[in-house]
Image 1: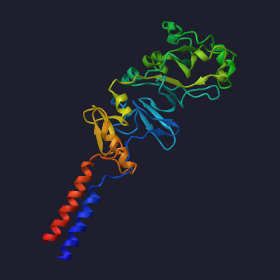
Image 2: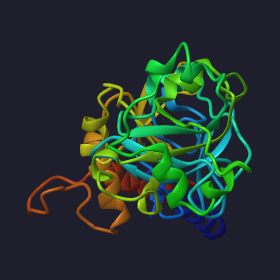
Image 3: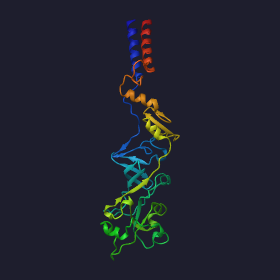
Image 4: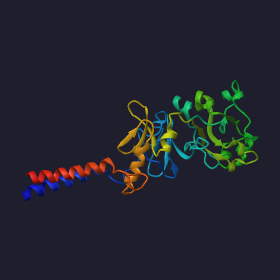
Length: 308
């Protein structure tokens, strides 16, 4: 009798332990940083995080965030979630300090629609031949670049001065938009190098040595109700099979809209509070259903022990 009672009591205690909610549960399995860059909706590093439209566009190694396109990986310098811009850097392009062979930069059709280079970015095609399309039939594609000229670009930078011919003459250049490179490769454009600059409005009167080199992309945010999810403590993601939006409230709990009371209870349990069944903390409220369930299990164990 005593042995049976002890076994039943131990069984009941083990059952209670297994049923007790786990504490310090992670609210989301989505990583929110990579190096020094924060990751928020609509972007995501892990599959199912962020918006499905931006799936697999970003990747992270130990220290750096990269943007993946058909032409390669480009390091992400910053993401401005207020301006909705992403600044990337092409390691294969030339800069004021480094001259590199020509290299095509391309975005997928989806990326062109979702986050194209902003109007605040310019592509400079350097050392173009006299037969280049942008100097002949398509010369209208070249534009004025904040009042700067090709000669200024060539003579101000040590790297670009290397493009001077043996006769001391520089070949023409062209300041243009990404659409030019999208439809004509560097081979067709017949220019040996290119560089990109952003922040055009701030470059008036500023020499090429002090330009901000890189590509600024402008993105849109899908209207999927993410703000409501985040206000209730959730993280926006999507079903990897249906691509429908989900609001991730914990590593084991997802909803289609928000976390609501489930999130509040989760936070209370994680804080080790004794009032999780009584959110207001006031006296005289009835105990939570989980507490009553625990009591029933204990009583059942005691009764069963006496019967045995």
